[in-house]
Image (cartoon, rainbow, N blue to C red; front, side, top):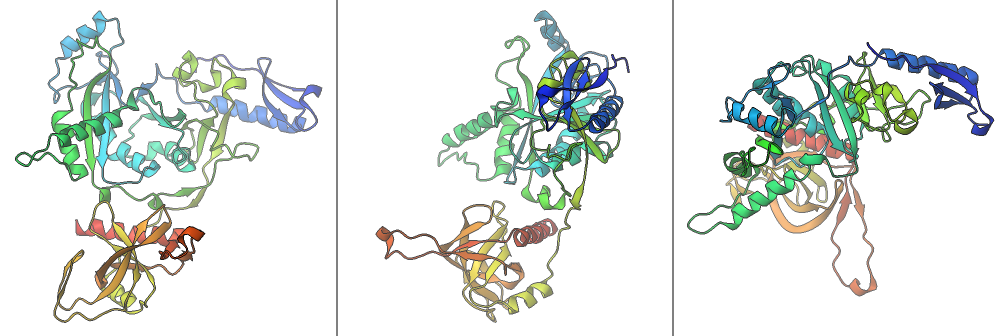
Length: 478
């Protein structure tokens, strides 16, 4: 690589105190501290190894929604978008702008899981297939993915995905860089998009009349509206002087399409060379030459010339400001769990063991509520003639049922009793939640005579198993 090699030296300073008096200097600037001279020399060896293992230099970073228009290494195909490429090139050149455009991608889904697994699925199943369909010569591009500082993205699972990106069938020869650098919100042009989409859907629903209803009851209908009416921007690129979004692309996924987080490998917290946690403090992750390791740094500078060429060890801000680069080993706690199918025979045997008061987990065909938590009000009841339930519909003759009372979700593991009673067919039963705990709520003197509603706290492992069983059934029935 055409780089200026850093010079590392080791020196002892009284001003650093007794705990870590030894300092590692790069070109005369302190970059690391150590307890002993031996440990300081070990750090120098690691830093030299870090420099040698950097990713190959690129001309510049290319974000996941931005591609060059020129006939060089990055070309965007407009064949399906009815866009005058020559006119667009002329507009950008007249306004002295880079020959780049912004394509805004949005995933519309009824899946409520806002986690790294959903993001990974979108990248692999929706975004990258679009990239390979509509771009030319991007096989060796560098993909920069930005996320905010929400805890689900500051996860060792994210580091595992980055480290093994080259194993993905959609990666080709691309390199993967992820930054978690924004405090909750403020992700440049991307952040206001979802609020805008919700407002567009809201406006359309407000136009609804009895003669011409425009209500959208499902995520799929919202996706259909957005894709059919909001792909093109109101103002042209000429009117916007070449700035802003060129076109919007909307993708849809049903809840059953997106895998559960539990099916992905669980990964230990990343530890730096000194054995300290560096997952939470790191905001920059990128690939190492070994897929069992990942590179990370505390601050994600992507604006200086060195960092834009992926020479992160030469950051113009200096390591004292952005922090040193750590090479962390990916240590799996366990592999991803498998979906578990409950057969009718197994469900019947489980239902026959149900006693009054048991907490039950069952399947539900409602896409926004794929499983139900309830309390058994009866044992398994024969049903020789068939029966209709006002909520669950008709239960065929010969299908025994359990009378239940529904619980509503307060938080991820906390549920409280509702007034709704329903009949649960035995084949919808997925799990008897034996490890759930009943919670006694605090009662004030003003409500001394009020009736108590049962509140339960579910066991995390049992809830994960219920989700796996319910998800398996929904996929199999589709």
